[in-house]
Length: 239
Length: 239
DNA sequence: ATTTTTCAGTACGGAAACGCACCCATTGCC
DNA sequence: GGCAATGGGTGCGTTTCCGTACTGAAAAAT
Image (cartoon, rainbow over all chains, first blue to last red; front, side):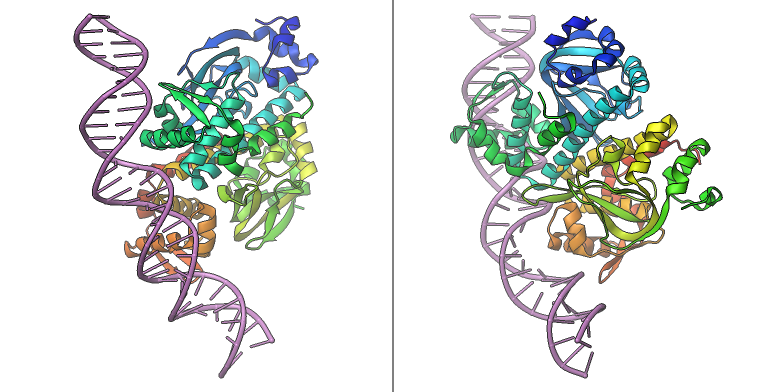
């Protein structure tokens, strides 16, 4: 549980934006948690038990179909909340959600959040805008998947992860990057080499460090940026 | 405006599900409209003026970026409503929305719908579930764009359009199919030939007729079906 | 310290789709 | 009926990425 005065230490942008009047609905029910790499947060078709306000780390939302095709449809970090379907009135997870980069945050029981959203119009509006932000991200992912080259998609992903991290070191294997982008592992390896050669990143086994972010942004081009800009608009760019 | 007793003639599934108690918020404000091919419904970054409950026809929601890359992220027909961002508390359109297949329906002024959603919890829940359904569709599109072959994506699109049509004739040029799928026009032409050779469709200039739907479903495989199943679950399969 | 596992590097043939470009057929228009 | 515009068919070289698979290096396990 999180005391009212503890709000100052909150890094999660969404929690930050919870109105003072709404805080009693949320704050007392938050449970601080640490989240390991690959820790499962939601399983497709299973009820959502908790929603996570991340402080640190990156969660990956991955769509899976009946033939086991899978691809990431969005990432969630300190800017948002997991369990979007819950906000939409659906108690079940549609996608697989798990920590891609270990972190920490606060979680709230699903039923508490649902109740809070039902009670407070302002809280509901906030959550809905966050969900809308995620929707935009998913749409942009659809665009990138359909039209961007592997290299551009990789750049986009690195930038989105970087936005949600406090260091430049991305602790991920090529294998996992490949799963998220829906491409071959070897394809990722080759693309990273290209980045390395151009001085955009450095690599170590199981880790990649962002060296030249503007350079990566240039590679991603217009495939990166829209969801980020739109989220700022939705949640207000003030602070 | 639509009289209360006229509800029986409504084909739109969402309107159908509007509770009797909520009907006064909606019904009196509906305006019957016919919608031509390519008629614009929403323009990116512009305010949404009306939401459309389609009866007939198919609307296409297309994501566009600053470098003019574009791809369809979802379709809307008699099962839903346009203007999803409005339901999420956002007054501006994120994507380009226009009629892909001409039709008709009822529209409601944006502010009226927003007001109605604010007033009625049940109406809000209904609209949110519809939005959630669209979100699932977008996620599935991201999956298909990333992992499916052109042929599978084409099959998927045809099935989704067919679901929303009353005939088997899809009045579309290869050019437009190509835009929606984010591929070359010539690529669509070749893929359609393949379908034709296998007796799945027949074609005429500017038109394609679905002959063997099960065959097309087989081509699409698991890339088709999830959003459809989930929408049924969300809106209840009763009736 | 040795074994086992995981991860990254690399290669190669092939499939899928692209960019471009040209031509013909159908349709709409004056 | 003749002309312009639109839509469809086709070809070709090229790019991108896949499937598969083998290897060595680094890390983890015993």
